[in-house]
Image 1 (cartoon, rainbow, N blue to C red):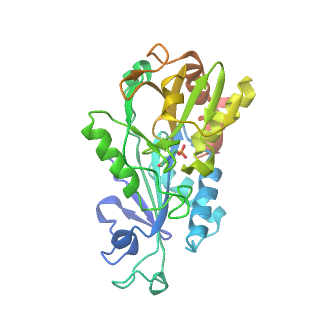
Image 2: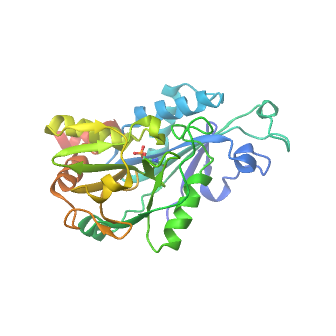
Image 3: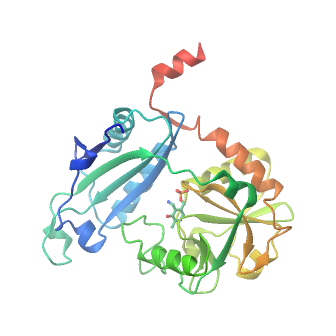
Length: 301
Ligand code: PMP
């Protein structure tokens, strides 16, 4: 297998030799932020938006990223090129860095910036064709005034608990409600429902990540003439929806056909979900930053 290279604060290190200290506060306390990004046919999908969200997450927790957004953009593109991949998953992590055995982040003076590029693990096509059966779980979404779900932090324990509960219920994904009982999001994806041709997705204040895929879907809906309302909704609204789907960098657009034992619509991926997936798969190849522009020129001529 080809050697993979990991970017670590300006240097490329072999994957087998890329390590972080056990005193890194990302490891000790989950103190840091991250992004998951996809490359489709050499196009880093909405790289700028991912980086902007990373910088916003960092700003919110007073973590200063020691590079400009342009420098990091270049580092991501170079990392993909160095690993010679055209379809890939990128994990960009910024941790508070090495500190003492105490929470105080002022004891950490050197944030770690890490870019891992690897082959993407695709969801089986069958999942898109058949749709997912999911559940809602007892674990509620973090309340925004404790740890705001808009911060994509290294503290994913809330989401991990949801994943554990989903696994124990025998399904692959689950929906979290917020503390008021409104549907917030999945463990790693945003949620939409469709009712009488209109799409609904929870607004940010309900407590969800401002997903890049969610935004892309809203842009596509705008272009295709579907109305989207950012409006809180309950489990009941999901049960009686015509369609339901999840969006995320890993999942893309994936239909949900059963929630808590209730079939959604006719328990098959619905026409709007299918259309959006089709359009999304075109968009991801062109909307973003090209890693191999020379190759692109050749194919165009
Ligand atoms: N919510 C959570 C909790 C997530 O971890 C993710 C994945 N990053 C998403 C939603 C979807 O966001 P995106 O479309 O930016 O991947």
